[in-house]
Length: 179
Image 1: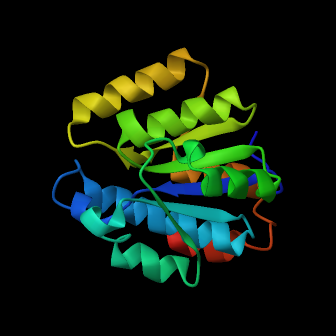
Image 2: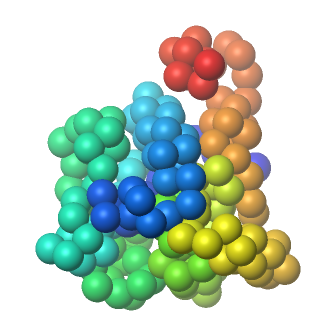
């Protein structure tokens, strides 16, 4: 089960250039915003990657606003863990459960998930916060994750699993985000 003290949120390449290219990008951005705001309330660390921002632009404005003052890790590698700075940030967090959100499901998200698994960390794919240009690519990626025993869940399920109880101090504020 997800645990507040073990969780880390990794936002992968949710950049402006993908707005018109990625299937249902607006929907995954909205779910990512909810996950980011919930993670902040729960003191869950957040790491954000940007794939070649000089060409693909920066993280979308709505997520930048939700993230506030945070470091963005620029990368050219497809897997976040093949970028030394990001890999070090993940290690330094001391967290073992890595919630994955971003694009594209079958490339950067997939390669990051497999590298996390190979290093002994637990990738947890937020199915409603990942996408690809073609829906079929996302379906294949989710199928591969399932076949390789990775956890797949949704934003809301992950948040309530972390909360565990309606008496959690953040429950009311987070409930307002989800509605």
